[in-house]
Length: 218
Image (cartoon, rainbow, N blue to C red):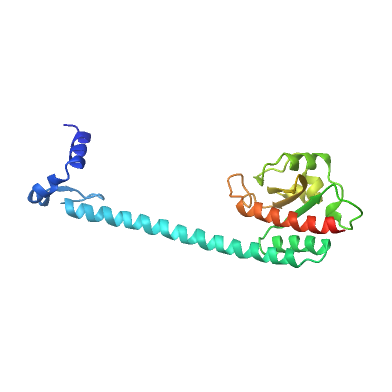
């Protein structure tokens, strides 16, 4: 019989262990870390201990992720309150820059909006280049990358663009795309293609709604 056949037989006939309990007590197998042979019961205990350690590691990871998510949730909440309390467009823009820098440690933030009705005294709402507008319009959601979107760096970040090594782009939408929130850092690992974007999307939704509220009222 092959080892696979023996394993299949034992799985299909668990009563075997009851019928041959004395025999199991006399079976010795190699210790998993070498050095000596041990009873099969002791080997089972070692296996359970190893599984217990693995579960402890996974539990610690789950707790850590939960704590990190709670911390991010608190930061998003503070940004939400700041945007809700903003009484004019300038305060909205200040709140975005301040909270993303101080709470989220994002050193570079750029906001662009277009199709703005009437004069608005805010440099962030200066006309964006066609490349930036087309790029934002083609995004299906937040986009993170190690390289700047082609043709947008100077438009968004000016002289600092050459030192930036990671980027997050969040389209601002209502019925259509009307702007872009861009985040950047000199740290190449601050934003990366595989990172989750749930919170980035929520931030984009909040910023877009706050901007529209004041743009439409002006």
